[in-house]
Image (cartoon, rainbow over all chains, first blue to last red):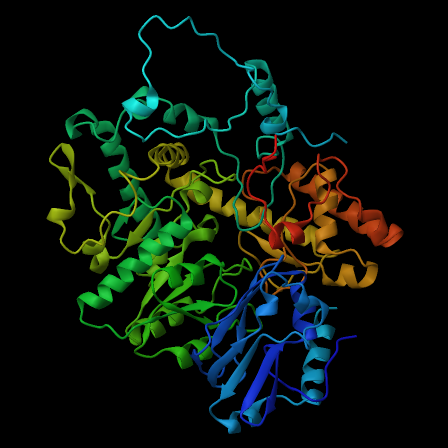
Length: 132
Length: 491
């Protein structure tokens, strides 16, 4: 069963984000880590980089291939999860506890266009039905 | 099952040699003194072995190999067609094999003529105006082509075009080449039929787009129906269109990228034109351009002056992007490609494409009842099967199917590519296989599906059993790659 925590917002590209006041933290979803298979390398952005919503700024490599990760919102990269350096398997073990980057969102309104847990669950359900 | 071989380092014994030298009969020289400190302090740690053991080592390795000379090799996207041996005979002729690229032009007229005519033939086959043979392989060709696109825009004072559009079904090399050349790769989605979404492309097209890279037929083995609209859309927006020739084997002699509106392309001579590949090369990624881009071709360019062939160097071609490869590219590969085209002739080239497409559709039809096609309708030279339903029903994944095929004596198809099809099995039979070979392969695929239904995934976990290493631990190998022999520093 694909885990979809209720306190997060989601993108159609399988990223999650949690906004807490002026800062946000984001990562990839359980569906994403499962679809990718064993993750072997994570390329994180530089702290301070400005990204636009939908811009690819992280690469997650698995045994199957390299996958771009897109920023759910616009803003500045405030911190990257250095625990992932040398331990990419953490993303397979728990993709919600093991975040990728912390962001300082520049436009809080962008959050409104993201999927709520119910809408994301529906998307995952459709994708799983398609693959069967 | 045989066990993995000892490496040369494990087999090494101190002092063992494969030669005997006579005693020194001239005064000795101190190496460190003579080379003024440039001499290394410790001897290199080379394996020490007898000749017979070296020969057995490498002969043993060669017998573990699997090649197209041994059996069917339907590795999708790689065009593993049989390479006729006449190509090898031509490449070994002393006039081609025993010359040096620095010889005076007048002493290598034959080699220059061969490259001149090969460029001409490739231009004719693709509908382009000029061809360079310098790039060493496909991705190198992509980079060369993109450098020319960049130079073309810059020559017109148009410097704000920083993006290259790439479909989501593209080969991974396309966005990588764009990035290496200094562009941002922007993805455009496929529609339900697996073709580029024309509306999505129109929405992306603006004055920051330098060009579009496209493989046609695409990675799903489908011919882009709207190809003229696609190239027109990019041209109207001021961009150029790049043709990735990875799948040219489906169309050579039938349709020409030049006529479809492409401005630049590369061909993988090592795929479409039957020169050996796999194992890292050497390849050849010839690049063709329309007349507008000809001034930007890498120098030197081979030209014909009356009855003589000569070179136009960088000083004669001020707009050239410069040299992209030492000398003339992988010349031995060029001789093989030339020989292939000459052997087939114009009619044979067309027939080769027809047979490649016929073989793919024949095999697709035979396999589609067990493994549904990822996309409906006719395919071109290759097709993608969806292993999802079999996995859902039996728990046996496409990876398991691939491993079982190894034990059945086949090289497996490409698996898990393209990424847009989960559990993808990408099959490219090529034109050189007989109906009997295709039937036997289909039977092997049927037997594997039957085994999956009867015995379940457990029966597959230990496959293959016929190889020295059954299933390499790909995850650990990728997470902690050990790329060279680890010497025991205490010994």
